Image (cartoon, rainbow, N blue to C red; front, top):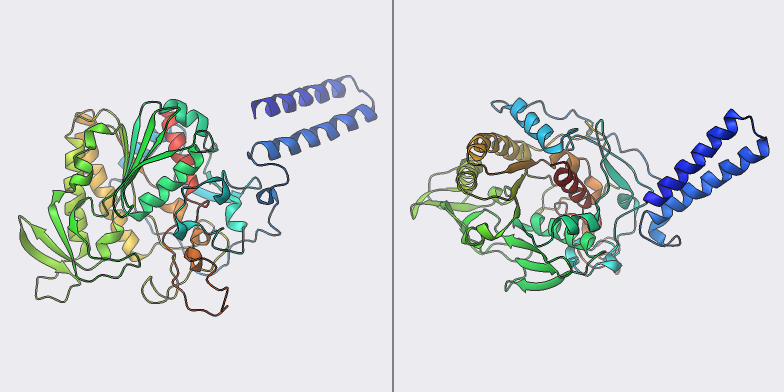
Length: 442
């Protein structure tokens, strides 16, 4: 890429000299043609795919988003130190707010394809499962007032030699870590050296750089007994302890150099809440317990998690990723909700759902409170606020293509839609672009 830029700069210099000395029209035409071919070669080569790859062919059309649901984004949340959060974000990026912007066309396409990565779970492998459109692959995140460089796998691996990363949370964390593994495997093939019985927690090592990456299944971040199958059907209520952190991650906490925590989505599920081994109440359960809302539990959990982190002597870097949206329309996961959009929303084109507003409000408040304590103790915490980036991408979910060719035998088949997780490759790859820039910018 540097060579291409250098060649283009040389051509520009020649053109300027010709202009100054009023050279012939013929020479100027030659220079213009050379510039065209140099830029064309640059666009092809920078993608990492051969020029005849189908993913380098521009989609037939990238249309403007549908005007449906054109509502303003919600105003600032009450009782949250928004200026404090903005200051924190500015410190993280050094130049601009990476978390506010828009999606713009990206003719070069994705950083990888499913055929070049063996680490994509079947439910997110939209291309393999027969998703017919490809426009969702040709967008990139453009923050306001600045440029976001593409993820540089070589540089990331060099920066992270002999380090250990951990993604701690639910299936969205697992979705995210697959994206990172696919991007890094373009340079150094990952070796899966660990997994639990259900393959929900995993560990990979990049041998050439001695980089270790884990994903640890801990959807609540605290102890919980979960009785759910792969389709989200429960045989009994979740038993959630609000005062006990999950040892899945706490026992390994000091061994990780970098961590990304996230939670929230599972709090909307039916659950019985425990504290000091005593039932406090329950959330939408059928038993004769005190009715408690999920925000009560989530605030307690985040306060417990952030207190553990901020009072620790951890010397690495810890991210907290805010909740990201689903895009179910006409229903939810369990009652026929769908997501059939094929282009991003423009800024202001969709409003956060009430659940996301509530989760986000609690997250910003509790993170802001924890930041003071963390700073006093020398613990580095950063907010990874990917809400808006993700909110504007209703086209990036597997939808019905969480299954293999769901309409092969019947185009009107009734199938389960996934409007929560993200296709790989897909919009979630931009999360790594943002993280890379935060690391580079210090």
